[in-house]
Image (cartoon, rainbow, N blue to C red):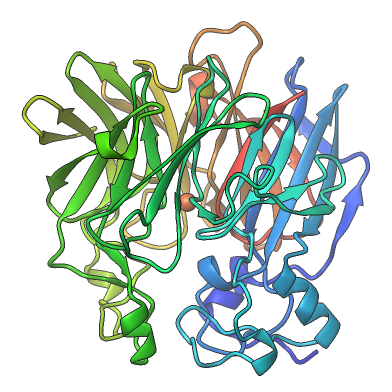
Length: 463
Ligand SMILES: [Fe+2]
């Protein structure tokens, strides 16, 4: 193939890794905590061929999953591209065929009408299966050990249309709650809400209409409610047909929270209007009387979306996101916003055993500088409203952390796992931090001889 163009989304920490393989027994510096047993999976974009159009890495890159299997004090590493339809077609052709999101006219005729699903966003672990998910599409099921692709997964035929990237699992019931969208969009009954029980059976499906057709990237789940977020990252087939971007930031729009009782009918969903902003990723949510407390990373203006005319805002003028708490008063139909306090962060996670419950500890990647790649890991203490921040040092970037609970430990008693990239050595480490003293730095590092390109989300799956 020809070389990849030396553009910002394809160089440095974003440069594609064209190698798939395995390291049976990784080099470990430091002391791997006793009792860590399970697998850490990290998904992310990694194009196999130079793109045909203007490249937006987070949307366009082929999904590659990196797995670290922790067994008996050893770590085995495996990486593999997810074999989507588009990946297989392009591998056979020996070149890119598909258009890019912001170059919709750049596709080869062979790709016309085919799904853009690149399976590059996150990892979902439910009813014993591992899935690679994408923004709008069905998940791909993967072999949990080898990462071989088993194919698209439609929940036994019960969900034959697109589902969201970040569904939520109730740790008590084992239920998976998720929203989906039917196409074409928007239309009456354009969105769907599903509940999947712990065995993988879809036990509830209902539909409803949304105020407008938006990228519904994440959601909230409490003991009583599921909440969908409709925000001004707006899809428009009309704009696309006129040569504009399919998704764009429509600044004049309000945001809306759609609150539906668990297993409720679509007619019982209630919309609550808010000022327009981009709540990218949620940390947790819980009930408090007639109020729902929703914690999210919030951008005043979504950074990954062009203006409706296809132009991009001056990135230097965009503010970094920060952790916010929304108090959603169901009696009044209002939302009160409260900032956590210090710090700029993204990719929030928590101790998943306490999802849907009042909690104290959250974590995210973050910035100590006004721009650039994530350069730190934050531990947010909601009780003291303080941050404990690990900064790996100059030239080293971080990824989303995953929380690994210590068996039978209290909330927050466990470890944080994150990928670090060192631009000087062009290689990555998997760092393991004590979650109770993150700033102290890694207690162990799994050393890799190669770079893992900057990615999106991951998941810890216990044995
Ligand atoms: Fe995401």
